[in-house]
Image (tube, rainbow, N blue to C red; front, top):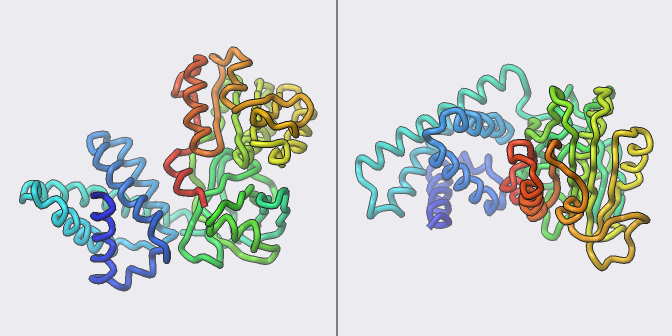
Length: 362
């Protein structure tokens, strides 16, 4: 049913308002999923004013990079209500329609207001020139860019990236370093099968190319008001924001214990291990433990064998630590379960949205 509603909605929107088609990517599969998720999240949390406002404000600010304007929202609402009425005909009545009108009016106004506030202090996007492109493995690249104007962010956050080869298709990548004095930004990108943006970043991007960046997002940041130890799990390119967190703690001068478990399928895929070990040598409060999948003989010396959550269970205790996870969605889910199981309260476990990670997989 969800697929039918969203497909009909977009068909109606593009027929009745063809000028809006240019705001959307050529391939609509991910966009359809995001629309329905946003609707479900908004309706499910309609009584939680604080959460709903925060969630929708984030969406409103993010939609600026697509070129969304206040006058676009009524057209979207009109087509959305028509699609819902068509596929909920058995339960659709004047009261239901009035409730949806009220809900959509609230949703759209929060997004419009957030976008207007953001417009006063930040651009809709940043142009960023590629200044360095280092291929670490056949499918992983470290890409460094120079934004055309200051780009404020925190270690542990991520940015949406659009390449010139696939306009209007944006994917999320975490910053691989804490904010630098020279303003440069680095990303670790793994090319995945059929991944439009990831393959472009790994195999096509070169110094001199220009990409676009959306505003920074994410709450996987360090709480510097506490001295709790930090337990970090980084799987694959998920080591990028973990490295940024290490740099952030180092720059603050805190000597709080920081335990990093860096996992990959094979030793070859631990592409940033040398960097992490150099950081460990420079900071006595930092411990880095490489973890490779069970049965792989190519792991580095002293590496642990198995999955990241299993490796973490071998150490501890972790009850007094704040935990950070970054990596594939499956690793995040299993990691959260493992960390709760060893006694870390869920409100001290931070990671990016699993739904966003799934959507950003290419």
